Length: 228
Image 1 (cartoon, one colour):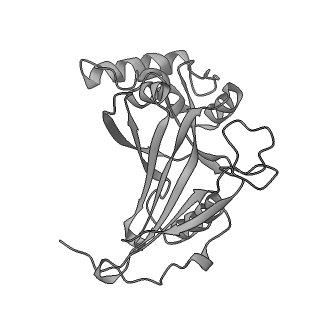
Image 2 (cartoon, rainbow, N blue to C red):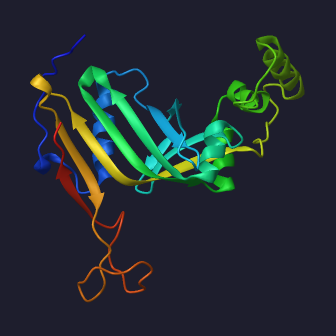
């Protein structure tokens, strides 16, 4: 099985100054193209000894600081992120022959931000966050449904549901972001943003922790082209 991608070449001059601006541009185009859940992304994590795992998660927010999703902190990905913050995100937009690959570091967002988002969720999703001890072994589906029904009795539609203490947001701060555009004969475009080196006030590359640093990841980027 092989697909011949036909699309307009992606040039360095086409890109926005920052990867998050470019992501916003492509995300709008993916949404306009009618992709089903364009915010669905594959989140890859790993244990401290390098054993990987991946799963599909919905992106809930993005801004100049990075990408935010929500999860149970006691889930497998939550535990792995707590032990090893290095993660990768993949947005697989195959219908428009595009994908975005992010590498970065992940950390919990503030509790107030988590609670504000939790209150915006549908009532059923709020109950589901309480009902599911994510990634834990359960005896049956009936057990899960029974938990949900007990919560529904405790918190009817008009009752506020508190945010679970072990549930919250994760922000991935990008270190590299690759924009992939498919073309015929595997001659794909792969343009990757990488941070400019940390520079000192005297114009030389600064060592880690230099107080006079004036640029760094998120402050400046360069784009490199990768062979497909």
